[in-house]
Length: 77
Image 1 (tube, rainbow, N blue to C red):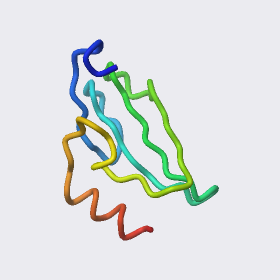
Image 2: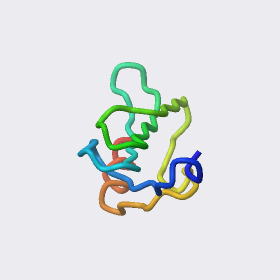
Image 3: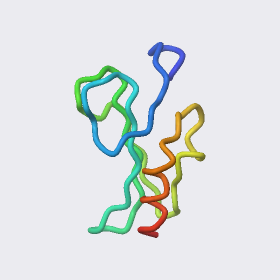
Image 4: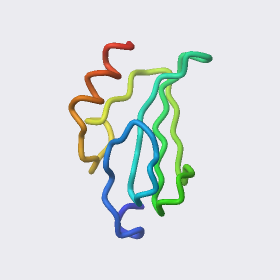
């Protein structure tokens, strides 16, 4: 998917309009972990994955990790 789009993934806490942004969150409603990817920079998810298991940036192949945000997410577990 990333090769076809020509972008690399960068971990963010929200979409800002740059292609390749991805964020990971834990839903307070259902307790699931979500990965949302914006491949084209339109601030909308182009690809979404959810899981009952913890998802970290290290689980997403090719994602540039934002250490501060990843630590903040891990504290919510």
